[in-house]
Amino acid sequence: MPTLFPPEEVLRSGCDRCREEVAFAFTFAFQPIVDVAQREVFGYEALVRGPQGEPAMTVLGRVDDTNRYAFDQACRVRAITLASRLGLDRHLSINFLPNAVYEPSLCIRSTLEAAKECGFPAEKILFEVTEGERIDEVEHLTNIFAYYRSRGFLTALDDFGAGHSGLNMLARFMPDLIKIDMALVRDVHRDRIKQAILEGLLLTCRELGVKVLAEGVEQAEEVDWFAARGVALMQGYFFAKPGFECLPPVRW
Image (cartoon, rainbow, N blue to C red):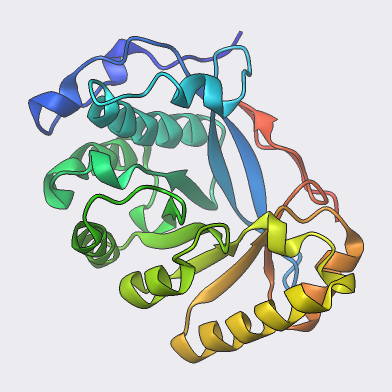
C-alpha cells in the first residue's frame, strides 16, 4: 500500500498560497547517488511519482498556476518525511520549482520545520533546479540559491547541458554541484565531441570549486571514463533504478 501525501502534512507555516491543499495524491521513488571513489552512497534523489508508481509527468502535468506554490511546498515536506521514515541517513536531493518560491526566507519554513520534526539535518538536503526550468527572473533564482546556501542547504543545477543557457546559469548561480545531463554521458567513451565538451567543463568546474555528478550512467565504460577524470559522484541505472517508496541497494 503506497504511503500517499496526507492533508495533515500540508504546510504548518508560510503564506496562504502555500497552505492550500493539493487536490491529487502523489508519492516518491528514490534513486541512489553514489561516490565511486569511496564506494559508498552519497545520497538519494527523491523523484515524484503517482500513487501507484505512475511516472512523474502524470503528476507534474496536474501542476499549474493555481496549485504551484502548494505543490512545491508539499513535495519538500513529503520527501523529507518519507525519506526519514525509510531511515535515510545520507543526502536527500529534492527538485524544486523556482517560480513557486516568492520569498526564500518564508517559503523555506515548512522545509526547516519538517527537517526538525523528522530529525533530518538541513546540511544533508540538496535542492536541485533543472537547467531547462523556465525562470521568470534570473535574479530571483540567484537570490534563492544564495539564501539556501546561507541556511546550510546544498544546491545543484540538474540536466546540465540539456538547455541552451548552461554556462550562463553556472556563471550566475554558482551552485555547489552540477549534474551532467545523460545525453552528454551516454557513450562518452567513444564520442570524441562529447569528450572535448566535457573535459572543458570539468576543467571549468575544478577552477570554480563546483562538484560534478554524471547522471544517467548505464555502462561500465561510462563509469570508467568519468572516474579517470576525477568525477566520483554518479547516478544511473548502472548502479540502481529508482525504488518506489524504498531506498534500493546499489550494484557496484
